[in-house]
Structures are given as structure tokens and as C-alpha cells.
Length: 219
Image (cartoon, rainbow, N blue to C red; front, top):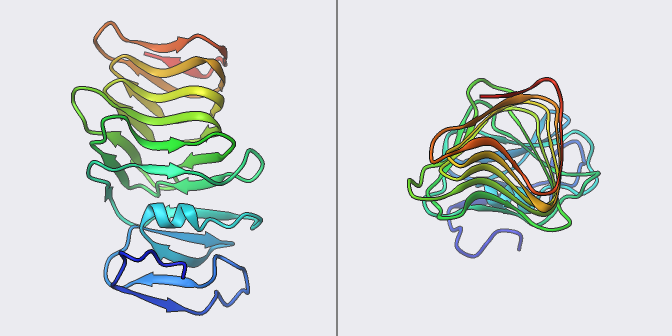
């Protein structure tokens, strides 16, 4: 019952040998797949990225979703409706590209949820490929942490509309602003490279509370 109705090409296997509950069952898509949930290094749910986000375990330690290949969402986007500030959904770009041409964002973080982005590989990136508008990640009342990777978009790499944003590393490029922090947003930026390209852009726009560390490099 955990498999969406529109996924016809799949197998449902037993739970992982470690006994860790990673959903009702381990799901493996026949052929190529986008991402997998790893718990303590053991691979569990393996399917597309949105499904792995939905299946992310609530109370498992050392759980992470790893991209297994470059993922093009087309005109779609990934929604984070689960996770929390203390137990966020963790997406490891794993050296791969996550792209979308959606008119708004590649990833949307909903209110009260949590997301951490990291890159254990080399060259992992989130890119909104739309040329007239677009955002990399939009945080609307959640807890967003970015530890590495590259994020780029026409408008903002990161839009912290409200909620909490923490950035410790990565490269961020937006033609308006690299990071937009709204009036209800709190941003703490201790590392990374931030580039506001054209259209009168600047690395940061702050209408809320923002703390910049000395290792946050604005270009």
C-alpha cells in the first residue's frame, strides 16, 4: 500500500535485514532509480526522490537519502512535508545534479518540517533551469540547513520566506540574490560562497534576522 498507484514497474521486498523500519517494506524499482534511503550505511527504500522523502523514517539515527544518479524533475518539484528541526529529512546530493524548470522552486520546505542538504561527493548541485524566474529551495516556515553542494536559480538560490535557515557551506548563485531572507525569516550563515550575478543582484537580501559569519564569502 506504500507504493503510489502510478508506479507499475516495481517489486516490494522484505524489511531491511537490520530490522530498521524504513516504511512498510523495502521498495525497489526495476531498472534505474533516482534515490535511496540509507540507515547506518545500509540501503533501504529505493525509488524516486519524492517517494524517498515521504518515506524518510521519523526516529532513525544516521538516516540519509542519497541521490543515485542525476535527477531531472522536468517542470515538477520536490515537497518536504515531514521531518522536523530536531530530526530533519537529509538529502545527500552525492555528487549528482538535481534540476527542474518549475516556475517557482526545485524544493519546497513546508511549515513545521525540516530539511538538511549536503554533498558527500564532488560537484553535487541543485539547479532551477528556468530562464525567466525561479528559486532553488524555498523555505516557508520550516527548518532548512545547507552544509554543502551548489544551488543556483534565476531569482534566488535560497528563499527563506519564513522559518529558520542555517548555512555552513556550499556555493549559491542567484541573479537577484543568492539568499533572500524574508521578514519572518531567521538566517545564520557561517560559511559558503554567495554570488548575486546580474539584474542589480547582490549576494544577500535581508528583511528579517540574519547573522553572517566571517567565513561567509560574498562575491
